[in-house]
Amino acid sequence: MNASSKSRRFAFVAARIVVVVLLVASFVSCRSTNSRNRVEEKQFPKVILWAWERAEDLRFLDSDRFAVAFLAQTLSLKDDDVIITPRRQPLQVSPATKLIAVTRIESRKSTGARVALSETQRYRLAMLVTKTLDLPNVSAVQIDFDVVTSEREFYRELLWDVRRRLPSDTPLSMTALASFCVGDRWLEDLPVDEAVPMAFRMGADTPYIKSYLAGGNDFRGTLCQRSYGVSLDEPVHAKFGSRRVYVFNDHSWTPDDVVKLKDMHRQ
Image (cartoon, rainbow, N blue to C red):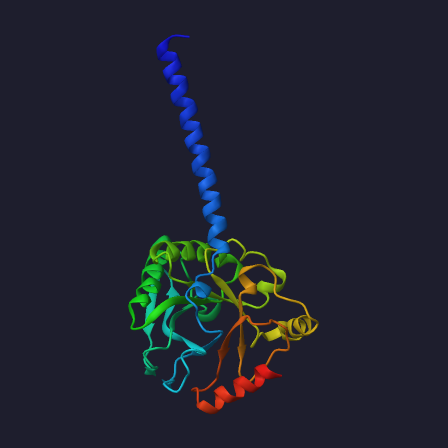
């Protein structure tokens, strides 16, 4: 074998080694994405109040015990467009309260409109979700999107787009239908820090899931076992220890509601 042949062979072997190393690095990166929990790293309080589209004065909250996840915007998909509805109601919190900006995405399931699920829509959604990080005192983002089966791949790619746009230490949270975290495994490889199973307003799944949790069972999958969501008027009997809990209220929060919340968690 002459020197030229040896050189080509060496280059070929070296190239294959580089490809293998890149593949392994990619695999490790994916695994580490799921193992990381930036919400915990940022030391968010164990109770996070959802503040939806209504006027909220939460200056009475103890910022060491409570954080707030507020609806920042609603993005509605129609044809190939993204229709933006920003938050219109005032939100008042103390400067020390940690905030999570929530983006609600509505598509075919909630609007009945035809949706393209195009790359253009996905790019615009990712840009708008990421932009909520610029709001005052926001240190994490959350997406609330009740996807149907045909929208899952689009949502998966959207989450990856958002994760790539966010700073590496910024938490990315998503809500999840409780049924996704009981009998469905499609959430396992998503690039989020938590998938919050919403154990309330579960429709036809309510009797089964409440019975499942009351029987001492847990949600399945690492991402679904980091936090959970309940409603103040719909307690769930489940043993989740010190797991982080998000709490929904169907009216503006008051100091009395927070007292009820403390009582509910002592039961």
